[in-house]
Length: 119
Image (cartoon, rainbow, N blue to C red; front, side):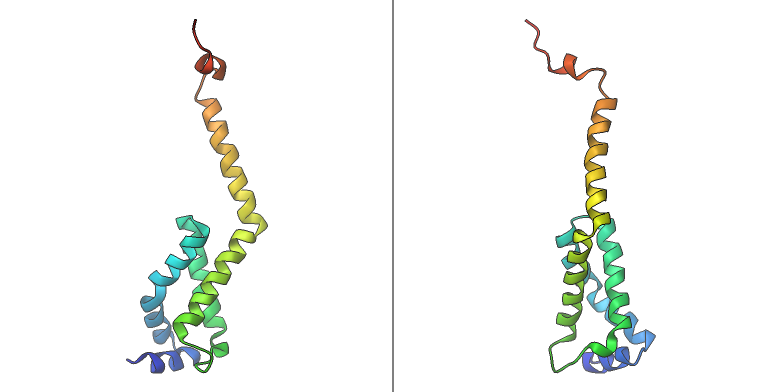
């Protein structure tokens, strides 16, 4: 099936067209998102959000403004940027840093004994 026909069916809410476009662009979208968020699980979550946004806003795509691939990649880039700007994302990265240091402290009897020089 040609891309133009597939996109028209997608805009008409054809689920099979959605599945084919997902198969075509999933890896590219995930790659763009991952390069921004730098965490696989978050990239997967945002990737799903991208395709849901594309589905819900399919009528806003116009062939006159550009290619479908460019449209969905722009959705992906914007969604990934929104994610890293979100308060929840920032709080999670702060918590991960704190947990890292807590783990270090819990696994060592005393930092003083590990860092003191014996003379």
